[in-house]
Amino acid sequence: MLEKISDHLYLFRDTCNVYVVTDGSRALLVDFGSGRVLDHLGDVGVSQVDWILHTHHHRDQCQGDSLANERNIPIAVPAHELPYFEEVEVFWGSRQIYDIYDVRQTFFTLAQSVRTARVLEDYEAFEWGPYSFSIQPSPGHTLGHIALVAEIDGARVAFSGDLISAPGKTQTLYDLQYAYGAGDGCDYMVYSLAKLRGRDCGLLCPSHGDPIGDTAQALRSLEDKFRDYLKHRWGIGTPTHDIAPRAILPHLVQIPGCSNTWIVVSDSGKALFVDYGSQSRTFMYSFDVFFEAGNRLRMQEHNIDLLRDQFGVKEIDLALPSHYHDDHVNGLPYLQKHHSTRIWCYQNMTDILRHPHGYKLGCTYPEPVQIERSLAQGETFQWEEYEFQVFHTPGHADYHMAMFGQIDGKRVAFSGDEVNLRGDDHYASNNIWRNHVHANSHEITGTLYLEHQPELTCPGHGGPFEMNSAHWQSFHDWCMKEQDHWRSLAGPASLEQAVFPDYVFLYPYQPPAAPGDEVRMQVWYENIFEEESTLEYRLVLPRGWSADPDSGTISAAPGEKKIRDFVLRIPADQSTACRRQVFTIDATIDGRYMGQLAEAVVDLRPELDWGTGGENPRCSAADE
Image (cartoon, rainbow, N blue to C red; front, top):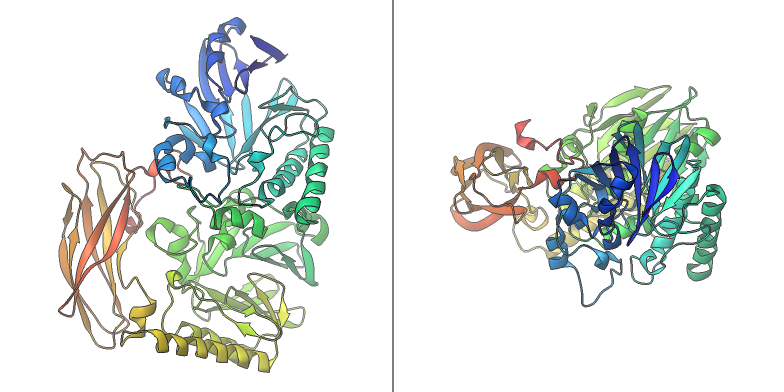
């Protein structure tokens, strides 16, 4: 039977608590359990269910969703849990069962996929009838867990899922560990409980247990217990939520953590951000080590209230990424959406940030970023009372910049992940070949820093450090020695062949498409040899697919990149049971047959990708 909580809010106790929000004869359900709630809705005058909103993917919340599909009831799910609803067979086909070190309780996933109608994006709102449900990220019980906050019958109500089950209590402990032996889920719980407590709700509606009225005390009690446990079990005295900004100079602030955020604060109260990404190594570790099929790095808002209250920040006016990596840029879309922040970047990052599906690079964040301005090599720009200059600094990645400026009398460099302190007075760089590294990348960067010799270096990870001429010479020497090692190890006469894998490339790498589509694509050939070079190629396509043209010849001078367009045609009867379909390019270079050097991965269900929810399918990057 349905239990009345208030005039338009009811509770049905099933495999989980199912909450019924009514608007006349219509209803919205928060979680669905076995689906038995449908047999009781008539008791309160409900004849139609418009939506089911899920807080997370565990079976006790959604085992009846196939029934909802049969009755054409639309289902909305947390954006970061979509694969556990729509791609269940992929999950079970790839889930590690032996040698388990990813100990997340994703085993409590559905046995068969269900159709969803919409994703619930963090920090956005779901509008239904007279109600607006604010989507509050609340990782802990699951990594993609959300809470839903709405005003109902004059009270602010939080549908908190399995974040809390009673004052000072949570339903399970085994769900709160993701990595083997780690305290990651407990760290997330402190963050989520504190953030939900800050919403000042009058009522908590948990997935298990009774509705809770004294919300502040209930949440704080559980939060404090997790703080104590983190310190007892793992020696963690500062949970991620408590990592706070600190002043480095009067107008320069650092948010430390996994990836630094550097903030220049003008006298007017405007702020310029360099990077805005993952707040702690714990929050990053959940994604960069223990990915499961379809997972996406999740951004958690952090520290903006402290910047306002403690450092006088009135407006986040401008943000620039030091490089394109997800741990540095995952907060940029949030700043754009919720703070109207302008985003500028170095010119060779622009397309990656706008069209991340175009590339096959390490650490690419899937959510597009709108770029207002692209900055050229050596370009100087004025922001408030400060002048900055940007330069290309390849090595860790080709899509990387340094930004130099004078702040509070110091020559400051924002160096991203290019300059690292390793032990006492030992400075080095960091290269990842998948990020596109060239034979002379480190030489370019080492020489640039030796010429500029900033006094204060603000890196992407770790604290700031002061360097003198001897330190910069040592860094330059390390860069040159690194390239010497490469030349010693590599077999090909052209070192580029050993360090740069994508000199033949199909763009975009992950084109979105549907059966019957025509997709504009490109063949890229970058001549990495010391003489003019010719690529002869043929596309190797799945059965029934075609391309126009399906072959061609490209000649390029040394160091030159040439591009050829083609149209890919997908048959109307193409099955989408397998979401990704690969095709390759068969290559002959300067008369030498090289075989299938490159591939592209066609995404046949782009509605399942980041931020589309089936409503705004991506275009091919080549269309622009």
